[in-house]
Structures are given as structure tokens and as C-alpha cells.
Length: 209
Image 1 (spheres, helix red, strand yellow):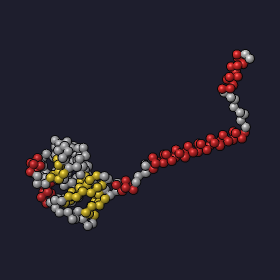
Image 2: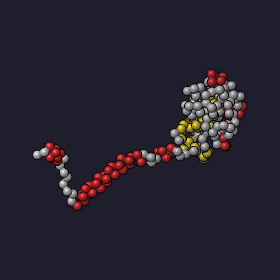
Image 3: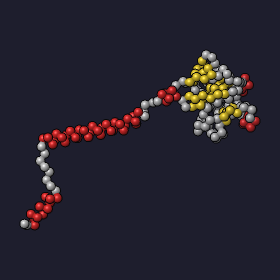
């Protein structure tokens, strides 16, 4: 046997030739291919479904954007309660006659005394920034970096900075607001507190949103 013949025989042993394909084999291979594709597609759908479903808003998420109601008739003068609206704290405060008088006087260092550059309903663009002089509704989030200010009433140190008036103080970076949520000059907060859209309801309630 020649060297070429020996090499050919060796190669033939290493790579045996495929058996002839019959029509039945071709049909079986086609059915297996379809079955594998269908299984893969089903797996892809099963894997993708949780991601698609996650884009559907939950009932809680839908409710979070809707209006909320809060009572204020049971508040004592000078008392405030907080309710949640769209994930934000909203203050509902019953101001005393003395507080309203402070707002009528105003203080000289307010940055935006007429609320021309701040957010509030048109009907609330007044010295008290409210529908009723003694009822204050505001989003309790500082317009600087989102901290929540605290009410300061009868605090001599705070009143000294506010020309003898009460107001709100942000403990994060020292921004100060009067009792209508109007920010003073030369503090980090650039704008007055936001006044959300709200409406008065029977029974001394407010509908926010």
C-alpha cells in the first residue's frame, strides 16, 4: 500500500462519512427544529413577563397621585397636621389671629414677598398665600435640597432673625420662611414653599390635589 493510500485510509477512519439522509430523517429534523424554537420562544416570554408586568402601575401608585382630603376643623389655633399627597408631606395649619396679623405686616427681608416666582394656585397669590387667611396649606419640603422645615413659634433666637415674627426653619442648611412659607433673602433656599392645588370642602375639610 502506498503512503497516499495509507493517509487516505487513516483520514477515513478519523472522519467517517455521514449516512445518506432519507426524507423521513429530514422531516424529523424539521419537527425537532420547530419544537426547539417554540420552547425557546416560550422561555423568552416567561422571562420577559415580569419585566413587562413591572411597568404596569400598581393600585397604590395610582392612588398616590390622586387627591386626598384632610380635616382642619378640629385643629386648635396654632396647631398643624401633616398629610401625604403624591409622596410629599403637606401641612394643614390653623393660624392664630396674631399670626395672620404678622403676615399682613410682612418683613422687609423676604426674597419673593408677592410670590411672583414661586408655585401656588392663582387664588393663593396673596399675603397669606391661602384661600382663607387663617388656614395654611403648603408642601412641607424646603425648596433648597428637599429637607422638611420645622415650625418655630415663640423661639427668641428665630424671632430675632425674622424681625420678631414666627415661621419655619430648615434644620439642614438654615433656610427660613415666614408663616406663609415665603423665604427670606440670603439663605440657601431660592423659592417660597410650594402651595399645592386645594379646595375647601364642607365640614371644614380641604381636598388637596
